[in-house]
Length: 469
Image 1 (tube, one colour):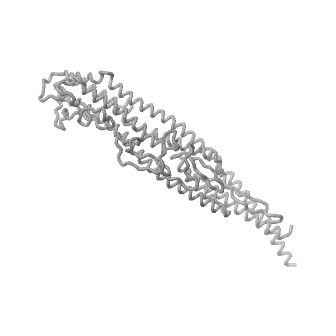
Image 2 (cartoon, rainbow, N blue to C red):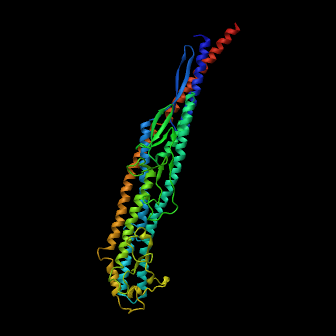
Image 3 (tube, rainbow, N blue to C red):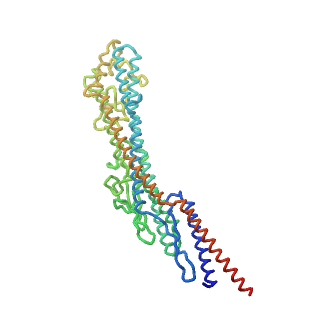
């Protein structure tokens, strides 16, 4: 080998070693960076006597594992939304063993009626009935408000997620263009691919996505059900948030916004194009889960109102007059049940703060004057109303148990989804940057650099010796 060939080979070796050291250093520095793909330098023979040349930088990626992990993230996000909702509603109703649960409120109201029936002349006993009745109503009111608050929050989250989707999909489309353009010019686009992966990963909990390689570094994005998210250009989602949501407002009657994709309405149900992920789960919460819970609570409130306004229960009332429990002060309207739980009130006729008389709990809600202090017949009938036609406490317990069961089912689904997502994330990490291996490679690169530097030094010494002759 001639001296010029030796120098050329050594110089190319130094260049390759320097580039390899840079790549390895970046791998080590970004070992914990989300979305970072391990890089590896590609070398080839530059030609006889020309040493080596860097032909490119490859980025390691298991697309099948990445796709599965993103789908698992979407399933986990959807499951967590359900857990949060049912846990919140269960907390509002109270567990069966809680002193402030709905069933405990009913038991205390029942006990207060029994006590008052034994002491009909004691104002303190009558006040105890009023207080426990108001506590029961407040618990049902608060549970209903909790459900509607959950709907409002879900609606707000939908709006925020739609904004995130539109912004992120536009960024992915722009990165596709950059990667295609720079890649065609021979530039290293690994950093841009990392950015694109991070952007797509940020969507995975909101909406399940799948990548389709279109060549030249361009990636199309679709949902598993076939809705195009990025195909050349980014799709655009549309949604109008509602500031206030009442129980009678639904997407079906047009009072609440649905989801629009590129100007066309799309289904967010389990069989829709956008099924899965926290976006669809929030739609399910707003339009299905919360209304179903509200309907169950309204039915319980209806049962309570009906029991205490039954015909013959209070002879002092005229036909159609509201009983002890009212719909915002009025009699029950079977055609206006949505939201009854929030409108439930104790009849003002027995509330001193509203101009009523607590003695009417003994004498009858329509009593114009104070009756005999020892007459407990009406109190006995009120107490019996809690058990006639089936126990009201049992009905309330069934509601609490149903919500608890829904919560447990949701937690089971969430636990499975979370475990799967975590397992796939661990697999990704295992296939990512191994810092120990990278350090070993760096030592080899340093040795190669030293060897090539030594060759250049020796060749230089030989040239100097020849020049001195």
